[in-house]
Length: 232
Image (cartoon, rainbow, N blue to C red):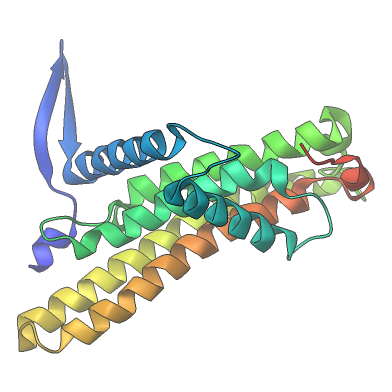
């Protein structure tokens, strides 16, 4: 059971002289992407303003809840960031929760997955910072109040990738190891309450990852440019 915690090679893709090892992490991620794509398709199919379906109303409530959550943490418009942060919450949430399905392991227990998510979050911070502040004003923050702080500011930025990747990876991997050890020692009865509790933890970890990304994005926007952000 414990050895199944770590990613396993499912098959190999041979592209000429290059062999690409496809692990169960990648396969599971593909499954989640396919499921979310199908869900999005059926929800967005036949949208109506005058006569919305129950599924449409449910989806709209989720979007409104995401926007309200982001609004509650800042005094600027949050709607521009709703699609990106909302996608992170839903995608990471599905990856964390898929382990409750037999024979599936959450991809976030693989450091390569959390590292990829952190790299996306890292570039999004600079993308939105430049978008709202302008390239010149955004880059000024790295040399303020002194140009000698540039190396330290760059190091702080890069360290965010490792911090976010290790936080999510460590939380998810450690939980799977705890459950695996308990099952090996005492069977399937005792871990059941902990598995139920882990569902709450999985959702919480997904929320924290997305919310940290949001906080870093807001922090990367020049304070004097915040009032220029408008509802879109």
